[in-house]
Amino acid sequence: MNEPESTLVEYADYSCPFCYLTHRSLEQYRRTRDDALAVDWRPFDLRNGKRGPDGEIDDEADIGYPSEVEQRIGQLRTKFDANEMLSLDEVPKVDSLNAQVVSRYVRNEYPNQWAEVNAAIFDALWEDGRDISDDGVLAEIAAGAGVDRDEIHDTIADDERRSQLFERFEKARRDGVTDVPTFIVDGRTTTGVLSPEEIERFVSES
Image 1 (tube, rainbow, N blue to C red):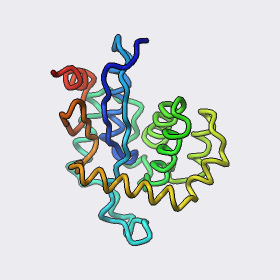
Image 2 (image 1 turned 30 degrees about the vertical axis):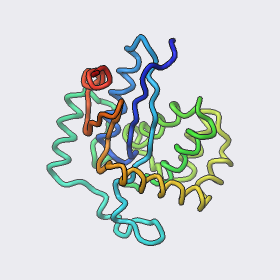
Image 3 (image 1 turned 90 degrees about the vertical axis):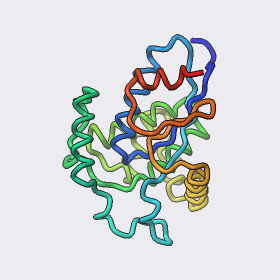
């Protein structure tokens, strides 16, 4: 495969069903490209406004979805032929913060393993219904990509890494990111669920 000619910036939150669907589209698109596509993944916290001073979500009941959003997700699930995706009542309503911490750690320290870990986190929640806030689940996912389990437990417990992640969230908001999935390439921005064809058009625009 050739060296990447383009870099696609991706803001995402693992707990977002729209991010899961677009993740599937992005992977399908990348497999069809003749040239490599570099993806600069950046974490985003959809629930920032619901976190208390300790970083925990104040009211876990608030992490559900309005009925119109649930209907839209169901429509997209059908449109994208995402048969592996569980219905929303089968997916645990969890805080993705630990998963974001782990993903960023792997991205920085084990870049060659990151894509596998990233996909496995999405699949664990949206296809297998696993709790991706659980240390053990995340350690198992990382171990499947060759990352030591103890490193993952230490990373999740590291307050400094958590603080750095919150700084990344704040930077994203300062940069104008308000929702996910959000993609940026060559100074152009698009937000929302994209099909593989829509991603191709967005990346290819001059």
